[in-house]
Amino acid sequence: MRRARGFTLIEVLVALAVVAIGMAAVLEALTSSANAAVYLRDKTFAQWVALNQVERVRLSAQFGQFPGTGTSTGHVRFAHRSWHWRQRIAQTQVAGVERIVVDARPLHATRHNWYATATGYIGNAIAPPNPLGMSWGQTGSGTPPATPPGGNTGSPSGTGPSSTSTPPGPTSPLANPDALP
Image 1 (cartoon, rainbow, N blue to C red):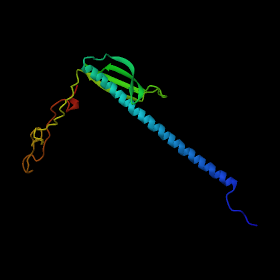
Image 2: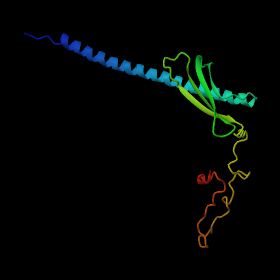
Image 3: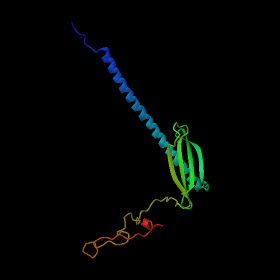
Image 4: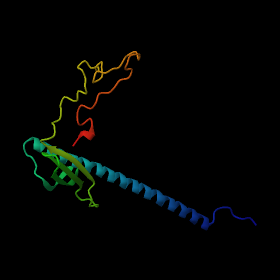
């Protein structure tokens, strides 16, 4: 008697169960990845909303509307969505300088914690930005000076009494943090 070749019903059902479990794991990984991408996008937008609010406060101060200390909240439209922000302005230990802390999250977020926080400072003890850029010690010709600051270059041939260069001592309290009160 000849035996029929092929798979039995049990073998087919076991194979289908293995494929179904594998497909469920792949689907779960894709869902988790998509949720993480959406959360990171929202977190990035929330950071931009918070940074924009910090700059809004800074700009309003430049036009004479200096904010008072305290907490305020508000809503803003950004990236075709509504966002909720909370702003806290507090005095710092430096007279004339205030700290701005802004938290942001989507308005209808399922998570009620803040997605991003931005911190900035404002006040009359902070130098205004230099619109021309930093000079970084350029001499005007585009080349660095021939001698280092302090003028001590040592002996060029290495045969003189001083064959190594001695760096100058600190000239400001910022160069030596131990000298600060």
